[in-house]
Image (cartoon, rainbow, N blue to C red):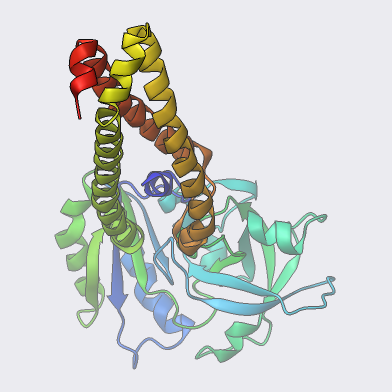
Length: 370
């Protein structure tokens, strides 16, 4: 349960609110090359930017925060022993403004650079930390081998790094962020198929207007799963954990209730069985406070042993769910402390109530109790 709460607080590296998104099913026979794709998106983006309420419009090759485009890379002037890999996306010039991704160094793409398909690139902080830890990344050239396999492969696959952005989640929430490179969608291939709009109005109201402009540009293009980006991210990243959270909450609470009731019942019954012993102690001069202290101490000692054994078992079995935890360690002190405290309080009450009842009984009555 605490892991799911931590999951909701994970920084995605972008702002998904007020963003409309849709996947565009471009006919494969007419949109193979960068030139063909550019011929569709350039007029469409101009149309969309002119719509009332639209702040920014962008095209990209994937819907954040998941990215499946990956390439072997080389960095000019850098030697390596192992093979270097990086995720990459093809985007338009307003991509970073649309998602409000923060720049740490340099700048984004200009409209002229995208229009002229210049070889420029933006990388994330993980890319810099992993491949250029002691160097200034601005001005370095990165080669993307994957561009050889596009419909219009580039002879020169080197892109000059002009900016560095803060890390954006690109493998989901449970997996560490991978190095990532963004390049203009006009440079190669037919990768750009996602449309995103940042709006000043409710993004949900943009559906008809976007559909009208898409069909005015090409009536053969279909909009697939149009929705608000927040909703899409919720379905992609949080639906599974949310269901797991619900199940864990239900079964966890049921289990905790059963344990609490069980501990109380066993200790209360055990204490009640000592009514005869309590009567003897009181007949010999023991005070009620002494009886309470003795009974509660005995009960807590038993519970302490049980909790100790339970913690050891939890530490061993906790490894089974380690991969499902985010922001919470398997050996989570607050969880262990809260559970231990609850069981100790339950045990104290379970011992004290029947002990108090027995201590208030007349010693002669208690002595006759069997």
